[in-house]
Each structure stands twice: as C-alpha cells, then as structure tokens.
Length: 62
Image (cartoon, rainbow, N blue to C red):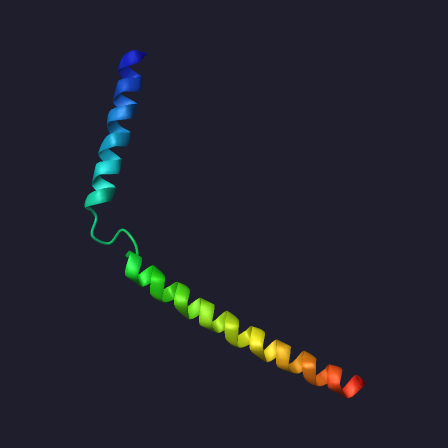
C-alpha cells in the first residue's frame, strides 16, 4: 500500500520534470503579451465602432 503511493508520487514527479524539459511546452511570456495586446486593440476597435453606430442612431432619434 505505501509502496504503491510512493511509486505514484515518483511517477508524478518524473512527469513534472519531463514537462519542464520539453522545449515545445507552450507560448512564452512575450508571445502571451503580444496576443493580449492584439486582443485588447481588437476589443477597443470593436467598442469604438459599436459606440459610433449607437451615437449615430441616437442622433437620428433626436
């Protein structure tokens, strides 16, 4: 019973160590910053367009 738990912990540690050594494990911080900036600018653009359309429609109502 204890031997099985120790073995399970050892397997988990080995997987964690191997994951850290994988060079293709995911995007770096710089890549995430660029992605976040693009999404932010896209959201600003869409928000500006929606605001513009709403203001035009509001002006027509008045």
